[in-house]
Length: 293
Image 1: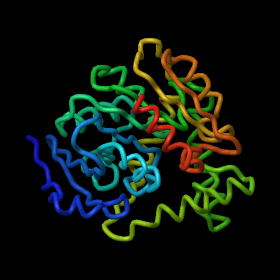
Image 2 (image 1 turned 45 degrees about the vertical axis):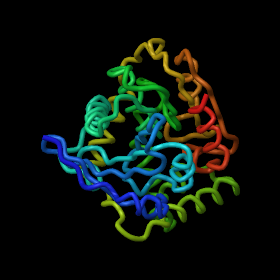
Image 3 (image 1 turned 180 degrees about the horizontal axis):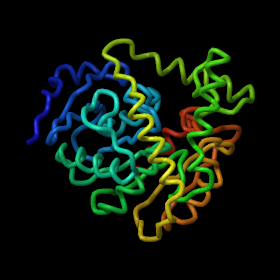
């Protein structure tokens, strides 16, 4: 059975929600309650569904990207099964995460969407387009790589190392994981982490340790998976990363772009895994132009 929470009234929408205050809603499919937020133009055009990174919940999306995309599009972000405020047992494979995303998209009554997947979300996006190509119009994937890609199975080691660096220096691990250690990268990381604090009320639940470990297992298996034939993906794909990604090494981004027959590649200088956050002022218009072509 399918249940949804009431949508915000039209007057409230007209008042102008932004990512920092848009309500969290739920939609129930079977025994799973999916938590989600939606923003922007909801009449006409193809909705953009956001697929989030390792250990992330709704509050980990950069408000500048969400608000920037919502200025032109209907944007929807959700917590996968067992993540954040969504109920159920967390998935431990990209294929299961893709199935859950497809379930959510169809439960929302959407027949075609664009996908924006960051990091692990970009891997889930690849699985979705292979499973249900008719559901996807265009894709944007950032900080990600193909199945079996170089260094992907080592994400857990890099993550735990930088979590320790963060602990011993009193910093958020994302400062190390997402950004370079140059002056520009350090400043961009601090600014990004401040933006994530802009939502002060009705924040999402943090990811559980159990769910985090399930996602690490999914990444390990994905990194050891036999590469798949991506030449069958005919949709336009915008592939983005920084030139110094430590989590999903940047050569994967070039490899992914080469293997997708209808791809456009953007590589940001002096940027790491979080290149789209560091260069959000360039990324948003580039993404909007790509979706609008």
